[in-house]
Length: 202
Image (cartoon, rainbow, N blue to C red; front, side):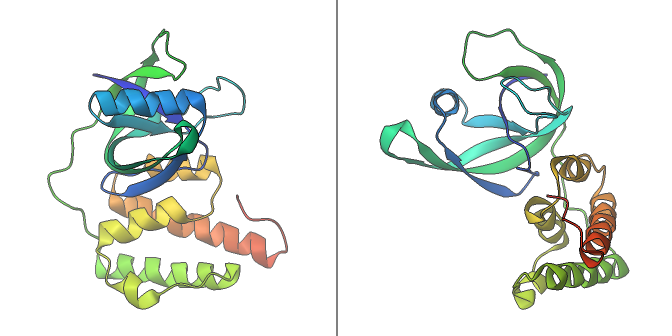
């Protein structure tokens, strides 16, 4: 169990081993960053289930370590957060701070990277190309081909324009293969919506 200061932010997905840049401007989160820097440089990213001042949270988030921080005028910060491990919310704590804190069950850090089969890797790259073409994205596919499986799958999961609930299913996937399969399925759904003239899932 761990006490974690949390940053609820819809659509912002952090995964273990990946990095997430954030611009911190709200006073309560400026205070959270100041507190984290004075302690262990760790905060938890989690998505809210709804809008509001103190919205309900999804059950699973990701603990991150502040690897870079840039102080700006007005107490604002640009930070770079590196994902450490997923966590599950046990309970929210009653605290005097403006930022929310929880008691969390933090998962053990994986000892080695997971890999995809050649067929799974090819399927993910193929569907990603179709998806990018459908939405008009310009992608350096040569650079993409050089990524290892974890960087590819988790990188796509973080940047792809799915809605918060869909993003959450990617975070909660129990394996890299499962996450890759979910990405492919979601891309196919969004692709069909686009072809039918509807809106994307964002």
